[in-house]
Length: 252
Image (tube, rainbow, N blue to C red; front, side, top):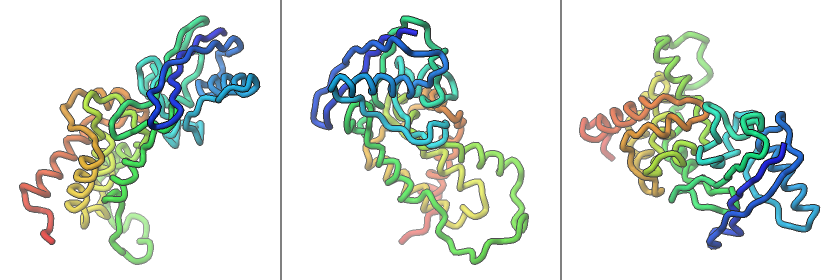
């Protein structure tokens, strides 16, 4: 396969950046998209040019670090697929493919396709955990959890913190990510003691980080490679209202 690539190149956070065109003539249908970039970078290095910087780790659709926009779609045009699991058979011989970094105020570009997603880490640090000391591990099934709650918690826990929801949202909101983290813990008995403090602290950190507000366009759920359901945002709003207007949050 011959592929024409239009890749965003940006030296650092202060550089204005630009699109640069490359041609890869020896691509194959069995290559993943990241392997295509590997081939491109090998050619650039051998010719004395700077390789394209991009994030990657597991390359198995698990870690979420391979975050980039391919042909206008976060993680590419294949539904429920991360870029590392996107294969070149999805494209045609002679295709022109445009590759860009996430575009969001809370995700500043570091270099080329690499963005700073540490804002997500700050949200998790604000409350995305359970710190209540429950002693040693309980016996299996000691605390019954209704299947519906367990299924919903597992579905929300599929979030890999990639940021595709933010990149797809016209407002740059991280509400799907935030809703997934809150629903994951909020559906379980272990998550109840800190439930109301958690939602307020995480929402405040989300807003302080520069993410936008949710207007329910649904673009986030469409772009999510793990198909996190849109209704986790309803859970987020429900818990936040109960914690604040409903007075569930304990006053310091």
